[in-house]
Length: 302
Image (cartoon, rainbow, N blue to C red; front, side):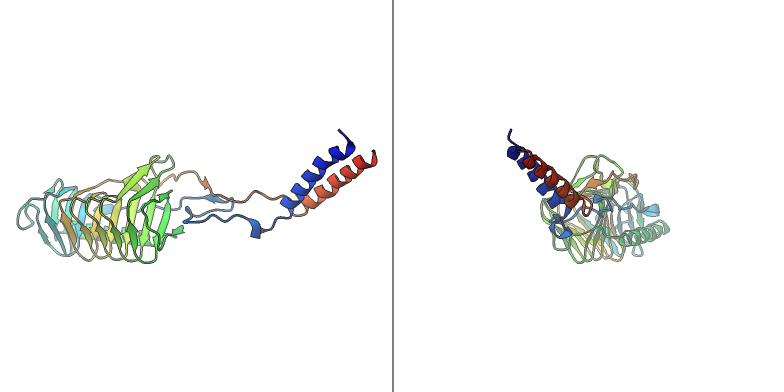
């Protein structure tokens, strides 16, 4: 190989290293779309969501404030409660009208147990609302997204059309918190699915107004709505349905207590997309000088 040909690769490497060393922050690639939960100093995702204790509300699958009404063959797998109201229809006594609803636990209509459950639901609601938001999804339909554990917020309403996938990253203690400013509505046939160890018991929906599940929706997670909850025909929820100030309206549904799967330890951080690391400031130019000198030496020996 001639000296000139030897020098060409040296000069090429020198120029490449200089470019890396003098790169500015403005050239770094910024991830687009909804970001995963909060990134730390190392450019990695850290799951920050914490599961609140449901306390005295933990055994309740359905808890209304004013009334609980049912049409059709609804099954409530857990306790059913109403407080401070006491009216419920479509379930066995003490509700009026008898079935066809079935409650596998106990019905607490306006008693001390239901009152304690409402207090616990309020405490859990406030704990959820007080967590720092990792990712703001305002204006984004949840359908089609795959979300790792974290706190996701909507400043106003939220919509689910299709399938929301929650990725537990291999940890059954993963937690998702959804903070919704006003309402959440699901389209007919929508669903919440879990992969890699995620569970309904680690999913919480704090709703600032009302929740409405569309026909045949297969939803998951504990819903705590400030106002009311409506489950349309055939909708199911793997998780509790709580209404703090209004009614719960049911129609041929299945609602089930899912218990607690803890709040941690949380999954290991997941790397975010980011720029190629740059050399320390000035290092690229120093290498350039050295390599250019080497090239000049090679040329001088022709």
